[in-house]
Image (cartoon, rainbow, N blue to C red; front, top):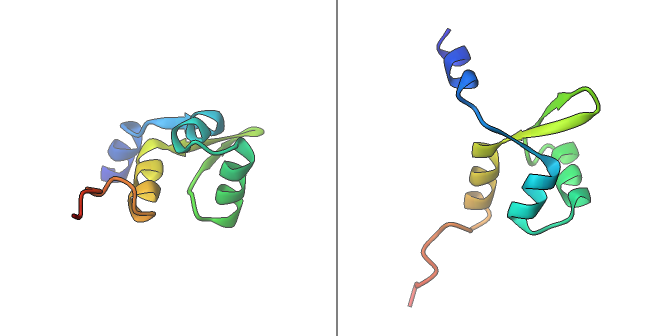
Length: 70
């Protein structure tokens, strides 16, 4: 039951929203999803990506760190 509570609080983004945040094309987001690099849930014919998955992906890619490494 703990997992369902966390899932209920999850925020989802559309592919277009993810593309805008990452400043890439929608096709690039689809490629990341199909490659398994970015988790997503399929609703009918569209995908939704958990907001925290986008943040984690960017963090792992090196964004979000302090860039003043002097």
